[in-house]
Picture: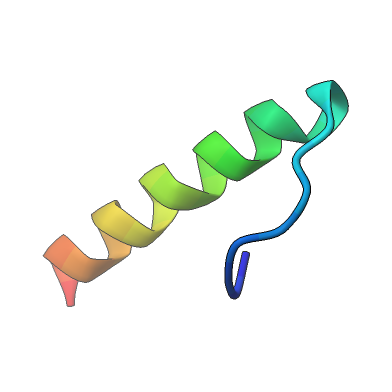
Length: 29
């Protein structure tokens, strides 16, 4: 998820998970 892009219903969950992953990683780092 390097930037804004079309999010089909199938990728909506993936995008959300990616965002959460980035937040968690940022906290640990």
